[in-house]
Amino acid sequence: MGRVTDLAAFSALLTDEGQALLTALRDYTPSQELAVASRLRREHPADLVTAAIAQARLRQRAVAKFGEQDAHRMYFTPGGVEQSTRRPVAEHRAAAFARLGVRSVADLCGGIGGDAIALARAGIRVLAVDRDPLTAEAARANAAALGLADLIEVRCTDVTEVDTSPYDAVFVDPARRGGRGRVFDPEAYSPPLSWAIDAARKAPHAALKIAPGIPHETIPPEAEAEWVSDGGDVKEAVLWFGTRPGTITATLLPGPHTLTGRGLPNPPVRPVGRFLYEPDGAVIRAHLVAEVAEEIGGGLVDETIAYITADEPRPTPYATAYEITDELPFSLKKLKALLREREVGTLTVKKRGSAVEPEELRRKLKPKGPNAATVFLTRVAGAPTMLLGRPVR
Ligand SMILES: C[S@@+](CC[C@H](N)C(=O)[O-])C[C@H]1O[C@@H](n2cnc3c(N)ncnc32)[C@H](O)[C@@H]1O
Image 1: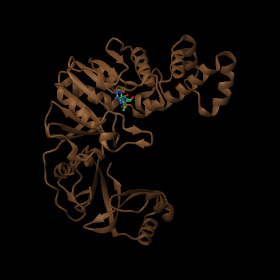
Image 2 (image 1 turned 90 degrees about the vertical axis):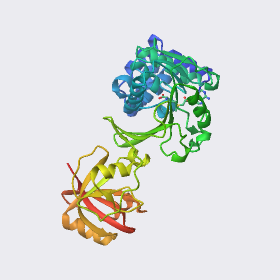
Image 3 (image 1 turned 180 degrees about the vertical axis):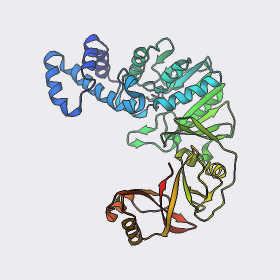
């Protein structure tokens, strides 16, 4: 990324001819690619057609994160789509900054601008910094394409070179991918987490985006930690500085629904009741299962497993409720017989604390019939157990 030829190809996309090509390619499907490419190459420079097709493909991939409207106006690099914050998550964070009274943010590691765009749309002035020239160009083009150029200044430099003192807040979203995939050690992030924490401590307010799997021991005492999920998938954890030290929250989007930790001890283990609740991943990562168990009036099926059980159906945004019809010790034969008896053809397999592979299980069971059910493979008070049920509507 960032080679002169890439930059030239990118700039060509911003010309009238490049724009016309991007418009023509908006709804193309990969199966048409060869035919479309050879047709377009008759009228346009081959390099430009190649760049436009690559960009059109990236835009299609970006729809899931940014929505149809924005994705087809924005510009991406392959890494930039992958690493950018999806719109609902970025908007949630931007709203939190706005509530803190923040008017300007130094977005250190701005990427193609996923966060910068949401911040600017919340009325916040942004300095978006990225050391990769092509990524910075894409961020600049995105600010212009979305009418936010007045609020977003893009600077192509190393974050360590930036004086953040003129800004109300700092946001750091370090690169967490190395040459060989995801990086798990926070000191191997670029920039390293310790650098980001130092930068955060110098600012009145700060947020650092980190991997959701980060061990809780790594959280500095003065930080507030928030785990965020969107549509049930855990997306990120964020360390907030200048807010509520030691507080742990889980935020579920859309909503938002935010659960705040109260330092509750582990919930009691109890026999499986009529209902089983599967907490959202953000709740589990934030270690807030006890808070949800208390809300539901339930206990755990096993002290090491994050399934809550209760006798009453209590609606909560923080867990999905299932009505349990059967509880039996783990046995493929028994499960097969039970599914046959219930005429279950559509089986959802969920597991916690079991080594069984759901796909393999489904293959072995070959369920047939008009009914649907969910089977939980788990441990109940230490014993491998199967719970059959269905979601509570
Ligand atoms: C996870 S991405 C940021 C994504 C961004 N928040 C978004 O939503 O689009 C991290 C970015 O940090 C940049 N980066 C990594 N180390 C850097 C450094 N030391 N200085 C400046 N940029 C850096 C990378 O080029 C990459 O674009």
